Image 1 (cartoon, rainbow, N blue to C red):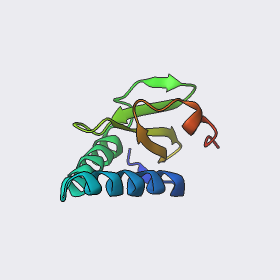
Image 2: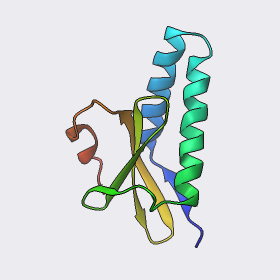
Image 3: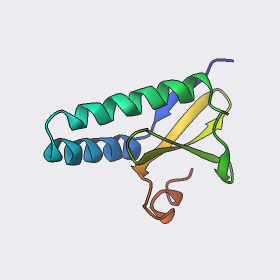
Length: 99
């Protein structure tokens, strides 16, 4: 089965914010972060069920080696990414983004 990856606007904003922060720390580090996120999205798209359910139908996976996790759920033929946040952030940051 083929799945379509949908990255919500707030998740895109999360990625842009993290990119800016990493790039301000070291030139080129933001691009390495984006590559890690792209690699993670590719893995999720190919094998969306490889990561365990963490809350209701929500799964998450880390963009190694960065401490950011993609938070997503699978519905019908889509994978919906609702956030890409730092792993230490409290769950209330993304729970309000659910449906």
